[in-house]
Length: 262
Image (cartoon, rainbow, N blue to C red; front, side):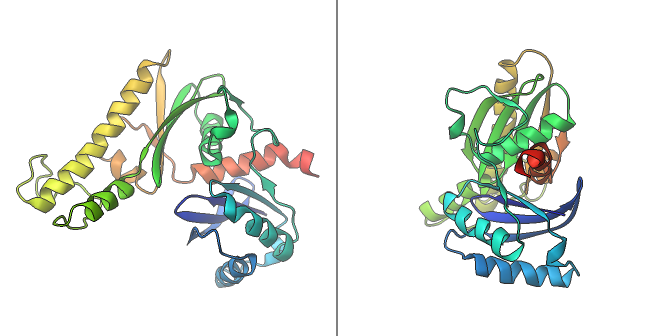
């Protein structure tokens, strides 16, 4: 089985996959100081709860946007699972798609992994919207070339900044405005919900529209990340939601590179 590790700015997802099936997944907060031994204790306990033996893991792959985590995650794989992990690094592995950018190394590994998974599943031109610490919009052409995209502050990041910078504003949850969901707030909380939530819907729709205008031909929009389902219910700009897009991209990348790793 494959241990797929996706390191984001906020959380790390560990998933155990058999073929194309994600059998188990767990999440831990990202901490560049966490040691391989700490990862091992935490992960082994969760595996034991599910009845998963460590010896079932015979391969691993890591994608990280937080470089300080890489050393100890590699050590985790080597010391506790006895496998050499494949690391998603541009120019060092087969990405399965072209990267049509002046400096491909600037692109976050997670964005490319999402692009790999989306292109494998959906035909045509694609926009991939990932709701993470940042909200990213990534473009893949119909012939399988990564074209670039846009990066905006994630909604939780925006809400935290608003709460911390404005002394009289409360912390609110990410949800549509209370009551009838209207845009005209009748109180502070309602007004904040309107500004944050509907403002973010406007961001999604506006960027998707502008990006689509720069693409020749029809475009399919794929959303992933923790808030993808919530926003999908309130906009027609999103065509498909896939919460496992990044992990499925890691599975595909491992399959593409397994023969060269042996």
